[in-house]
Length: 268
Image (cartoon, rainbow, N blue to C red; front, side, top):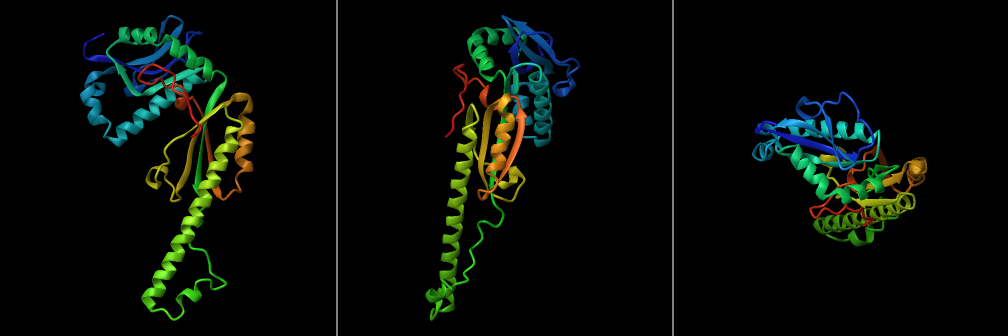
């Protein structure tokens, strides 16, 4: 391989036969399979002028480039995962050559083997819960509960009293919604093998104006997928809007950390 070329790694599986044919990877390069010690790595050749360390620092700030690369990466991983248990590799994982990929498969063989055993027959589902639109608005005051606090007060004091009451109402609504989101997570964990709560996205990233309360990922046995979806239906009236997405390859439960250990999902 030329010194100005590297290899982009998408996923690792067990070597159990050919992979999907005709896949185009990042930058349009064909995806190929490298086998070593019973494992198979799916990769493609890339130019280090675009995917080298310095170039990636610039490219990762280009949202259009990042979105296209992520979409292609996901498409390749999903095509492989449709055939057999798969350990997806993080976005833009680039090595200098196939020899370095073989070293990875050597050094982390046991960890990859453990991850693949763990995700066999399972898929990842995402669940997002949002505060119900309007749920954080100040509650009506039909009984005039704040009237006594504002009668006889100056206009400025009356305004401050109303503002305090509105803030208390919003805080109470938020606490109730957060409690309901926790209840949703607990109900889902009764079915899932393991779950992980990611950081909630702000409205600019989620594309919704409601506040996200739960951004959960759940590893679910394929045989219980319908049961998992029914849990979403059962909790739909708990004061939050719940969105189910997936299934996907187990991104949240198949990564290797820096020490080579299989990253474990948590329910906290």
